[in-house]
Figure 1 (cartoon, rainbow, N blue to C red):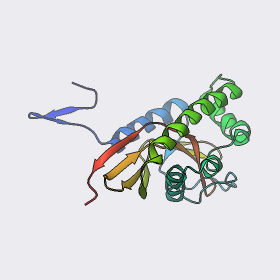
Figure 2: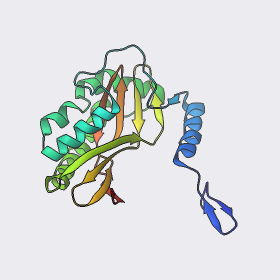
Figure 3: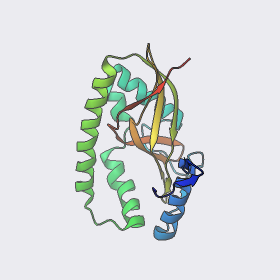
Length: 197
């Protein structure tokens, strides 16, 4: 039997993602001292990164629209910059987690993965008409001194003539002050959710 799956008679019962996230969050908090929270909580009274969206929903709408229109300028504006990563994000992450990876190496890996994801997503959305429905982050929210990172994020949308779809166009979001930015774009693919009727 798989971990976390229980049997009730002949049925397998799996714990919800929220319950698994809570257990994972508790484990991370105990081991690393880094707290976890929900996406609704505010961050400390700091200025958001320049170019941030005003809410998670606004970020989801702008990102989906950017991919649908092939607007790489908007997509770049909504993403964490090299300077923000170097001066704020990486120092706080490495202090909390004790990572020995050099910042420039970490950033170059993010850039490579981001470029691949943007190209793949632009190609997928180029031939489709979509309309935003919702955005949600199902994973653990990792807390740092001046920002938090929301994880396992999905954008739900209607596909003209094809029902509903959901895509992890960005898996992680950096929330700072009252602003939201994409950590990096993701090429996690699109999953069909069925009919919108």
